[in-house]
Length: 55
Image (cartoon, rainbow, N blue to C red):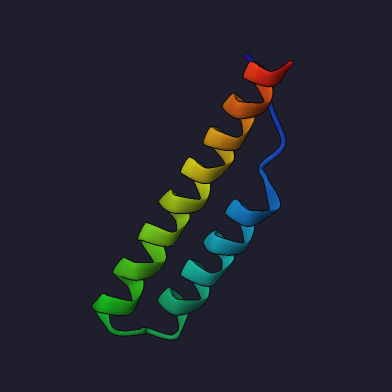
């Protein structure tokens, strides 16, 4: 099983999502935070692919 470190950007987005959930933010805010988590994951994945191509 491959285990890799979770990038800082993804961790920050997840923590922000958890904070919104704990403070019972409006659903719109929570949905935006979920999208931010996915966006952070996608950015990290794109960046890692770009590095692999250059190598």
